[in-house]
Length: 247
Image 1: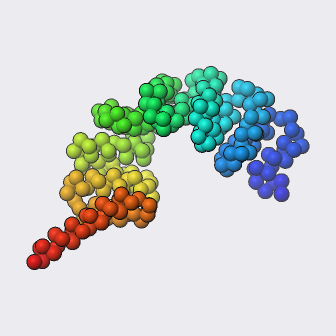
Image 2: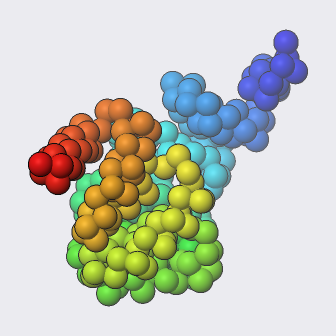
Image 3: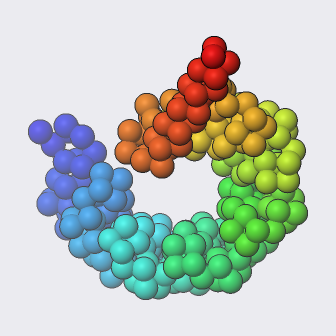
């Protein structure tokens, strides 16, 4: 039973040696991974009490707080982690997700800039900043960051998708379709790529191809009511055009 999995193993270790900080940190991490929040927090609290500068346990506890909607506590843990290891970009990136949710874009940009200053070779940082620039409708800045991300990681799905949005919004449809086709190869089950490509194809007047992508969207996400409505409208207009042609 003890050796059944890592959780039972570390639970047994703590039972037999309750004063080892590393055991609580490891168990807390495993609880985080398995989404056992009610068990993760006590274990991580114990680990942090025994070792207040435990960088990873602070990040893990912050992650749990964030998933529970306790954003202030999460940011507090991420800030403590920043103090312990100022040159590590992870806490900055984790804070960005919270600030994006709060629409505090100024704080999100600040933390991304800090993350990039410490880790200039992270495609994730540039992609995230590009997405923020999209929200601010700064297409030039967004394109610049997506380009940087794709130089580092040519198969970065979010960067490909983001750059396609920029291209489509600036009437560079062929380039947008090319990026979305590549993004589809990277993640064939991601509904976003089909939806964005369908919208781009509509702008190009390619209704039949757009219909096929909307069909895929509906298949992958049956709860997407908006795509279902667009699909039905397009399909109806297509049928009417055929009837007119026959008549």
